[in-house]
Amino acid sequence: MKKIIAIIIISFTLISCQKSIDKNQNSTKKEETKDTIVEPNNIYDKRIDNNNVDYKKIKTSTITGLSKLSCDKEFTRFLDLPNKEEIRLILIPIDCGDFDYRYYLLTIKNDRIVSDLYVEGVWSEPDSDDGDEITTFSIDKNFIIQVKTEFNNETKIKKYSIDKNGLISEL
Image (cartoon, rainbow, N blue to C red; front, side, top):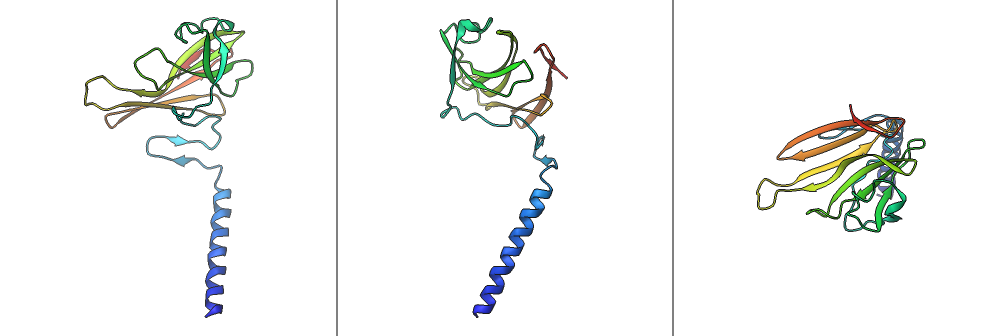
């Protein structure tokens, strides 16, 4: 009986090791999901937990054009994203609207906002039974931004690029 148990344990261990090896060998392949392809080399592919976010703060006046997006507050909360050379990328929550979960991606060059793009959040029409419009995004290693919006069982995906000056353009 002890020999049978030992053989079973060894068999499970070998199978687990083989699965781990197979997983590591396939780590550079694309993963297919329901509506999009997730690249293993994305530099950003997260969802913000709006109830548990650790923001940084910046004095709004230090970046030209930031006051209109920060609801004229003295300090703006933000999340740093990886930079594209001298282009700084940050996410800011939009606090002055009707919805508490809306984030804009900003590109900043020479302490000036070059572009902004709504990339994540939940939106719904008040007093409507249509459901929520959910927007998420990712940025790949080439700084291609993929924005996915789901609403009423319909999914729309748009892709954008960031040029050398920080301008975000739809592809």
